[in-house]
Length: 469
Image (cartoon, rainbow, N blue to C red; front, top):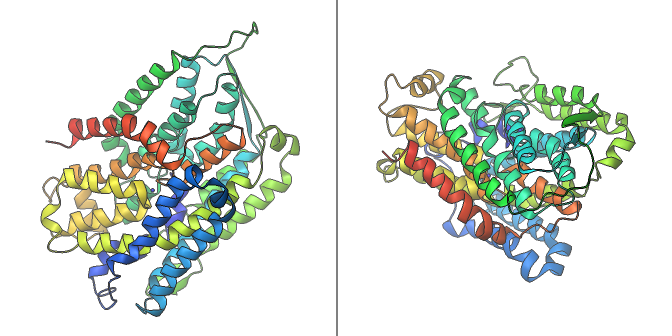
């Protein structure tokens, strides 16, 4: 779908629970599979998100919370009552709480930091800022980087802002930028928890990351060169200043709290859930820090950032529907990928495009785990065994395992930019831009105008360069 870390916490504790391969194991084999039609509420919600603001805007803006909650409630009730499966709905609820805790904490902490770029809004200045944002995405996650840089980026271009400025920000900072470290995006962090070495992403993703980034910046320059630079006669220092620097401390604490997971620290107090430890210590710490950050932040900084809770509220309500309705879609994908019929279809190409497609419309973290589990199972390995995952990542035993894992990792991160819901910060950036008075394209318009004609050919080139052969 840290963007991060963003969804890092959104999935950390539930990584082992959401694993699609589990559906075919003893842990889940006794549970009935959902009917295919149960994926229709998710498809319907996607269609309404895509068409509502365009064709029935008044109804959608007034009633989208009711629609999202109603559809999620229907799916979860069907699981509990008809399928007699309370595990999946509880998993989704826990994941949603974890997701919103991180999003909320990062949004509030970064809202108290005001970065000012003292430079003219030239194509070069924008390209440098986007590149810096991409680098920071690997240090504080794509959600953290997006929230930190979107406001100074919009302020820098306030006299010549166009929709493409925000779209390329989503492409570069909110998604593709975070492919170099496990901190950068939730699926990569889950791979690290499973046994993929921390440096693996930097070693194997660096070249595709750089190629994708340079291609996107080149296309961005093509748009920028026709956008007239405003000459106001002012002298610019070409520097960056920051107010609200103490919020950096809160931000560091939030990032550190991401690692407070019982799979890493066994001493954390947990609730045993079907053999898997779940702890909400991390979420409690994040929400506590968010509260402290809000009440200790200089209100003038919040005012200068145009800070409000409206974008956070919109994300909170929309993602109730997404998390609730995507349960059967993810389970059906996991069951097929782990089946005897699905295994022969597993190649670097199908892993890349399959992971990419579902990461565009579902959440990329469980999608990553589903495809890694299926890829390993097809070669007689288990994602549940750390030693297997380490051997798979190094490629010493299993043929083509490194390129398979790389295809899954890159696709889960890169394809998150294909839709607004592909990654957590996408919707946040869109909401902040709209709050700043920018008329952003609808869900479908975003795809038709930008992601399909611009991003998809770039992703195709990445496939040609690194995975097609």
